[in-house]
Image 1 (cartoon, one colour):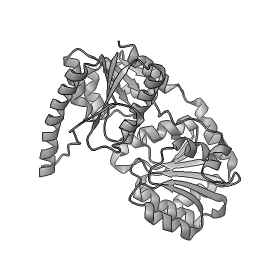
Image 2 (cartoon, rainbow, N blue to C red):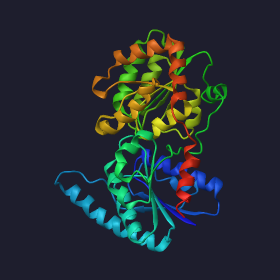
Image 3 (tube, rainbow, N blue to C red):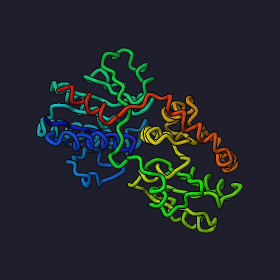
Image 4 (cartoon, rainbow, N blue to C red):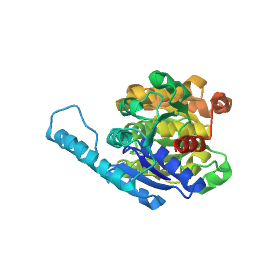
Length: 361
């Protein structure tokens, strides 16, 4: 069997695709796979994971009339031709799309060629690409049960699978995870991340919060800074004299999640799926330029009592400090926030998603 996987440029699209490919590689070694990515994506090192990769020219189209946008429209048609060429050369039995504009030409041509197709929606509220592609897909897999309401017209196609996660994301004994970072067992561990590129705003406001927290020497920090703020934050943490480990990007995220008592993050679909998997108490600041999608993702955790939401335009260091202080000084509330995940329908997303893909053949 041959399976072609196509995804957008962001970690929220790429990481579930990798989780799916990891499961196929582990459980179905005889299946031939090909991953298609846009040329401009968060990483050009996917091939190092052992998967064949092709790149196409598609990039996001903006709603304005400048020269760069004419180039993106040109690249869309160029990428469409590249998609046809890949389909004709690879001859997949199944095409799996993980959302974004990148997927549209490949999924439509696969439909025209009568190749079985499945799309996966990572967010609570489906993106425009997946809404459009729903009519061209044999199955629609969703990460949240409530997403089914957005595909009522296609309800017979919709299956709840959860969001596949990467193979390196396994639960690790907390003592072992703390030791990985050289951390103490008797301190409160906070994990801060702002998405695959980092968040300058979260970085700034967290520094302000941590500098005035009531007893900062009880705290230790794992901070995924992104490339832009790494050097600045390194100097700031030295001045604050807080035990911290900073990373532009961290591959060993299983250790970071397993070591942490609290996560502060955006509300991208993969981040939410991973927070659920590790059952962590969370402070979530939805990304304002994907506000509708990220707020809906965050509400899924707020609704069960596992997360506190701060709107981006209301974020400042003093509010963040108050919440952090309140959680550090109330261990029972933290314990309750983690226990609320028991009310969620939690599944083995990697296996369930993979089984649904293979059922198309």
